Amino acid sequence: MPLPFLTADRAFDASAEDVALPFDDHDSWRRPYRPGPWRVAAAAGVLLLASFVLLAAMIIAFAGAPSGAVVCLLVAGALIGAALRLLRVGAWVSRHGVRRVGFFRTTTVPWGATASVRTVQQPVKWLGLPRTVQGQALIVVRQNGETLPPLTSDHNADFLGRDEAFERATDAVEAWADEYRHG
Image (cartoon, rainbow, N blue to C red; front, side, top):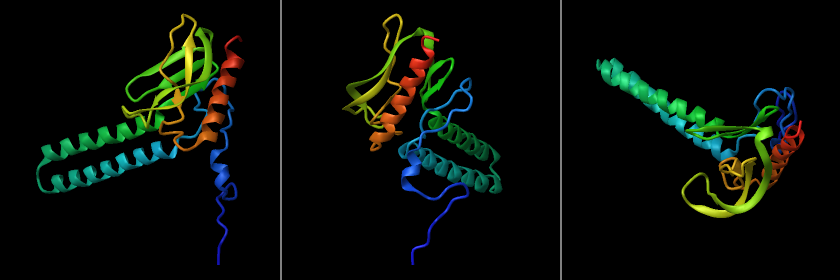
């Protein structure tokens, strides 16, 4: 006998996972899409590894080797920090501009300094790995003609296998650009 599953705020619906996020405050930085399943799974795997390292730190501390426990705690802290940073990677928008958050580097471009924000066909990295495939990428071109690395692509950890979500996210970023670039 199948039982319906309800969450606290809405009925369970597979298509409800890809609903665009609301934007209440345009002054704060927002990601115009939800993190993808590949990104969340990678962060969860890193957090699982961190939990094992923390367990090892506890065992080492009870065994009487505090220096080894401290090393394990530092490694676990680095893993937790890496998982949190992995979840923040992506394109962020606000009234002030567009921000490309990478794992090691963040680039912010004010809307007034952008010449265009558009989707192009080009070789893109598959899941952020060195392997490239033909795909679509959302790029920002500055007023001086410099093209930034892609904000996002249809083969990254947020959109691999989620073409509709990629289209919706790129449309949202392009709409932010159209609204605030000349304002």
